Length: 122
Length: 133
Image 1 (cartoon, chains in turn cyan, yellow):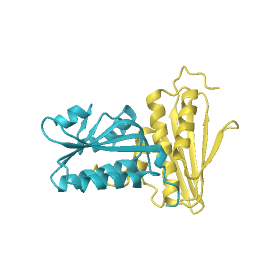
Image 2: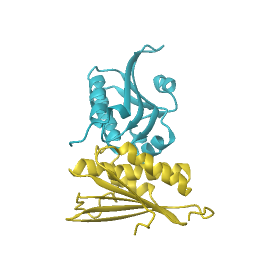
Image 3: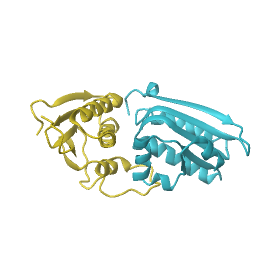
Image 4: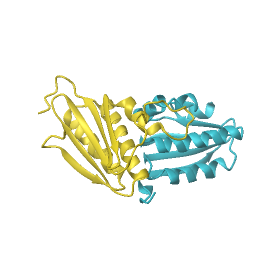
């Protein structure tokens, strides 16, 4: 693939959040996630998964668009979290993204919550 | 066939621009917001294949009449499997959802592919009361 990576299109920020129960990793995505920036997204998620968090929450509230390549990166991260005994959860997708998660049945593999606080409560 | 007033756009790497054009035209044509988002997803998935599988640019054409809006993507790629996208991938498959989504969200899809390239036309019916042209 020879095209420029669309890094400006997608913003990621990562935080470790101390909650009442236990700490979790929060990855916030905003902008548009597509094939032009899915490698960058994979690097971010791989890095966080490698730290062996118990819970990794991806906040989708700022994401205007997500395509199947971004979904595949998230599915891979989910598989890796599964293997190491952790949980990956998605929070507050906007309707177009939520619909895509339903159509692909990804929402049956990965729990989707209306908010980050509900995701962290499990 | 594209109408005389079809809009054409050539893309090489900027899918965000492709999506913005589709959304703008779909709204102008009177497509409801949720269905406009569906069309944006479909066109973006097909255009993503241009970036993935070819080294050249692709062309987007958009036109509409009183009945429907059509988005056409042409590129130099070849899709060997004529049933590509018509079988649902396993939920945990980490590939193959793109074209399948296109078939799910569009009212009608025409896919033609040979050695010279691929043309995918995605059709969405417009609300009956809407004027179009």
